[in-house]
Image 1 (cartoon, rainbow, N blue to C red):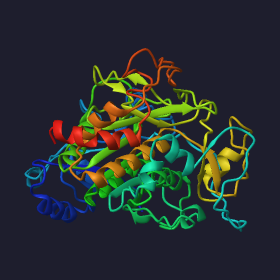
Image 2 (cartoon, helix red, strand yellow):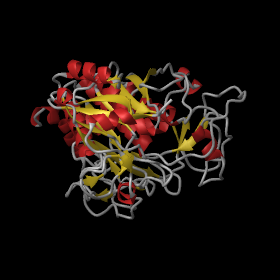
Image 3 (spheres, rainbow, N blue to C red):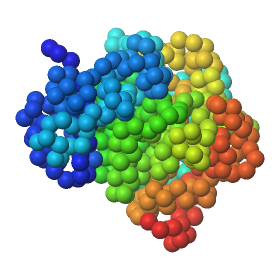
Amino acid sequence: MAPSLLFEAVLAQPGQGVGRACALLCALGAEVLLPGAVSISLRCSKALADRLGPDRLIQADAVVRKRYDLAQDQPWLCSDGPDPTLMRVALPALAEGVSGFVRIPPCAAQPPLPGRPIHAPRPLLSPLPPDVPYFHLQAPEDLSALLGARDLHQRGETGRGVRVAVVDSGFYAHPWFGSRDLGVRVLLAPGARAPACDEIGHGTMVCAALLSLAPGAQVTLVKQNGDDEVFVAFKLALSLSPDIVQNTWGYSLAEGRLGAAEDLIAATLEDAIARGILVVFAGGNGGLLYPSQRPEVLAIGGVFQGEDGARQAASYASGYLSKLFPGRRLPDFCALVGMAPMGVYLAMPTQPGGQIDRAFAQQPYPEGDDTPPTDGWVVISGTSAASAQVSGLLALLRARAPGLSQERARALLAKTARAVHHGASAQGNPAGPGQPNVATGYGLVDAQAAFEALPSVIDTIPP
């Protein structure tokens, strides 16, 4: 059976002619995966792709591979036209509804992890983390206390009823969740399988960080089918019309011209924000990622708070000035992240024997976490967990103020974040002086302060 290619068919008029375009694509032999307001996700054969576009698909040359920071063993199919991500439509009947076909680059936000999940019998899992002989934080207690949410929880502010969609690797029902009466609904993106498994273990950890801040939120995890199909999972998450969409995906893009792929992602983001969805992205663990560099998203970095309470920029988290968007400084705000080399900081539940559980058990601290490879616990951090903490904080605010828009949220967090003037980002950019700064943006988010300032921001900032 010939391999299929994944494309986004860009609608000539967003939101119009979707049904007819889907019917035409199916009639041509394409498999429609997911319609959307801006594009239609589809799979098709290479032969059909050659018919749909005037340029013959070729293997990427070194320039394109360098642009997207792909390893040499990662083939990238693209057109040989002026924009290597775009094929123009050649069939007149289809051109009325579709302007072109775009290939989204594969996600590169997370480093590859060694080994495969262990499926051998496992010991009974504990809802409590193991003891480790170094300073670390525990969820939910330390996260809620250090980010100012503990008193809000005691007052009944839990984000109840707020719908959060998480685009990630999967969710495993670890006893950590059950012991706290916390649950996560799982929805499979096209091609994804095993809704009860999180083979990598990343999504489980992210959900724990989010629910530590907003235990009353209604969380739906959209399980993606591989890093090269994450954009389809993102579109599925948006189709749920959530209040917040939590993202840890992105691909390396440091400089150069933005092409059709980037434009399509931008249009999709703008459509979501216009519909009132708060869009949160991880800022990167040393990488320069797209689309977190886009000015309209909330990009989250990291602050390390030590045993003595002192705060500094997390050297594991990205902080830099974007070359793609002049004047764009990342991150916007920060949550809790550990230090280089591996950010070992937060004790979090994960799938026992999953890739993260195994990977962090292979090396001693600080390169690893000194926990067993099948215990379902990992001491970890990064901007993935930090962005989830901020998504949880936003759920607390959105429950009290359903009209909290992206710009109001940005203004509110900028007004109330705690300044950080020490340390440096993964790129070596210093945290001071001034606020915002390149390493930590406006600083460490503060749920209590944001909650108290909420009325004034709602009254003074347009929706």
